[in-house]
Image (cartoon, rainbow, N blue to C red; front, side):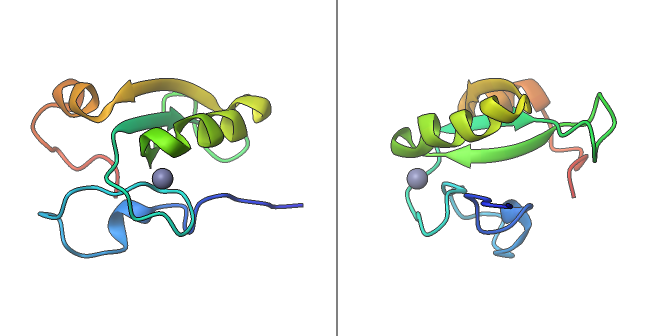
Amino acid sequence: MDNDPVSDETPETSSGHPDEAPVCSAKGCRAAAVWVLAWNNPKLHTPERRKTWLACEEHREHLSQFLGVRGFLKDVVTLAEWEGRTDSGSAAER
Ligand SMILES: [Zn+2]
């Protein structure tokens, strides 16, 4: 059963408006993202690869649990910290 809670695997590329404030990745949620969930599916991704989901306060726990029970979740950081960490957007994730 594939009960994916997000609308698309790469929601950050779907809008085409890079200047807009990032929104939560949860299905149907339009709230501003506050958290970044970094994850990796070892069946699909190389170990160093990081997929990211964005989450508002409300969905952080829901999404992190979804990833956590599957053993995919690697890191949960605030959006500000994540952007500081990845520094100048050398678009690794497209
Ligand atoms: Zn949300």
